Amino acid sequence: MATTRFMTLPRHIMEGEKQHPEATGELSAILLQLGLAAKVISLEVNKAGLVDILGFTGGDNIHGEKVKKLDLYAHEILVKAMDHGGHFCVMASEEEEDIIHLPPHQKIGKYVLLFDPLDGSSNIDANISIGTIFSIYKRISKGNGPGTLADCLQPGYKQIAAGYIVYGSSTILVYSAGHGVYGFTLDPAFGEFLLSHDDIKIPKCGRIYSINEGNYFSWHKGLKDYIKYLQANNFEGKPYQARYVGSMVADIHRTLLYGGIFMYPGDKRNPKGKLRLMYECNPMAFIIEEAGGRATDGKRRILEIQPENLHERTPIFIGSLEDVLLVEKFMREAREAY
Ligand code: AHM
Ligand code: MG
Image (cartoon, rainbow, N blue to C red; front, side, top):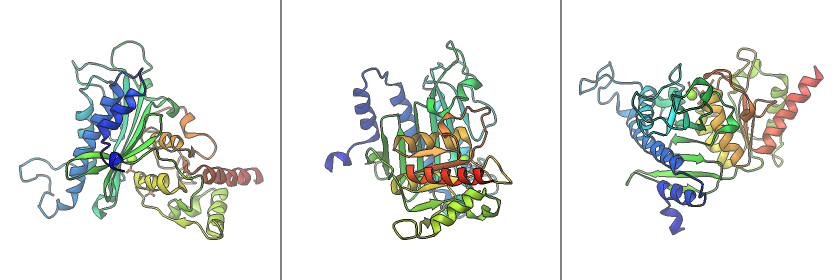
């Protein structure tokens, strides 16, 4: 127990590196830098509730500076933290329409970073958990020049690492570099991420389903049948339980730890659902698969979708292996019946 308590993020990353003699240390440096950005964003998120009390609204703060929306602030922190280490050739953010080039004269590296700086940010005012999601690829374009859109549009199975930070009752960073999934809780007293969730495995089946049921009448018939099946006594003689935060990082984090399924399906109004393939679905699918779960769009593995544009959306069914297989079966059978 005592050794686990003092396994900090930097130490964990360095020890992981020793087990992979081929590692150059670059990925470790990237993860450490992301951890630093997470601490800065976490501090600001924790202060969000004070904005009105301290009279920061209305454009300018007490220093005469413009107050930024928190999601734009998080975007800028991540860009600033990540654009000068010499590791990346290009980046992309959910907050920016086009790819982000490195500043001129910066060393250009071999990695590609995609991120959603603050997902679920509409929840901030209600003090509900929100999160940052990141995804790392190796460049595919030749040479040492700036990266391209094609470097960003790689299918998710090519990710070499992915993770998220959930700003909740604690700030927790979860990542995988393809050798297990690890979670670190930020100790606010000394500002260090400590290993709290070692080698996370998602249960094969869970008792919780998570979906915005307000969209029920627009759903696919198979999905309606599946949800009704869950609500009958089909989990060890009891109904499944519904939990929906409406903040993907929080919903996925709970699904990873307790099992079950999170869904954002396509429906009649939005055939591709709401969530973004590159910034939300691919990194979460990488983590959940690495933990032994499954992630599909109802038919295809999320990680095998060939992206066509940076901000494209996809339906997603993600979580415990058996739960995701079951919803696919319901949807397949409904398709075949009509
Ligand atoms: P955002 O990227 O604008 O923050 O939206 C993404 C969020 C997810 O965190 C969450 O799963 C989903 O939107 C909730 O959407 P809805 O309100 O339609 O259920
Ligand atoms: Mg988002």
